[in-house]
Image 1 (cartoon, rainbow, N blue to C red):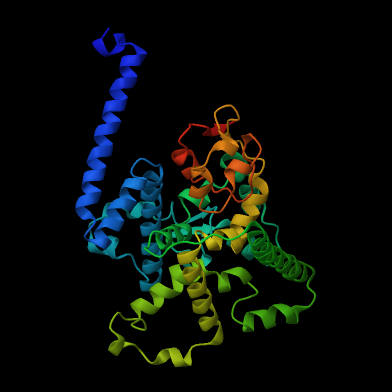
Image 2: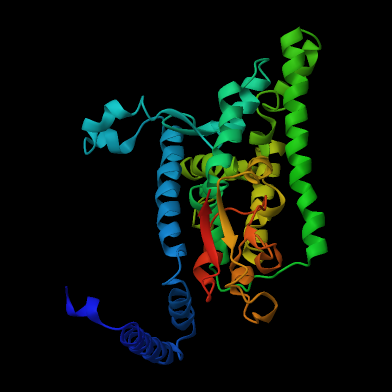
Length: 372
């Protein structure tokens, strides 16, 4: 048995206290040295706030998925894979058919289906409006949230990652009252049920062979008959339209080189870009604004995730509740859940994206991950 194993609990506690004090002094020293440089000081302080949180691990997961899917959008626009064409990864070409058309449970548009993943919500629209029932896609949307909640929203969704990056800017994020948050939350239900009604309406018309002019009119309106939400989805705009405009020279970092062709764009293009801009600006001031108030994919998953095996739980015995003045768990929640006001035990909340920031921020070890 080692000497460390024979140490008394009191001695081990004193050792941890000494280590904590040294870290605190080292942290304070670095913060003081960077204080004259405001921008550097801001990022150093931000790093120290997150260095012990699980957000760093989550950030790495999100970054990897984002880079892969954004690169997939570029390969779709180009019509070929530059890495495979260069010969660096030619030996992996056989994997492309395997990973080519995998449906995933986050807001990913079918517009980049070549060589990448397609969102289940888009598959539901595509298959449903073709007059067939989307058994696999709908089943996955219902089963996966029951197993792991909305973890895809917090850990994988590339557009959620974009919003998290917006919240890291020096712009101070704001909060909304409970009443305002409740009113804004109705927007996502309107988008969700409008889309599902649209799928059912067009799907039944196609299946029964009636109102053929409806589908024709929707197609002439810019693809609304294939996937209504994908036409205006800010995720689709960011991962498909933006790479297309960039690679075709329409968008350039140098203003003098901008292509005048935007004047001839169809109205739906302007609608998509303006909608994306509104969502990104909102994310600068309100964390995960799109996830909280607009995203129909997360809304559908949230309705099911209330019955998830994987949840966050709060211990009534360890939580100070009303006496906790810091309330770190509530302040850390990016989707505005009042964690400390929820009943003790499992947190069955449809907006929870399982980011685990509340778990990392709680100073009393009262908020934990529960799978049962």
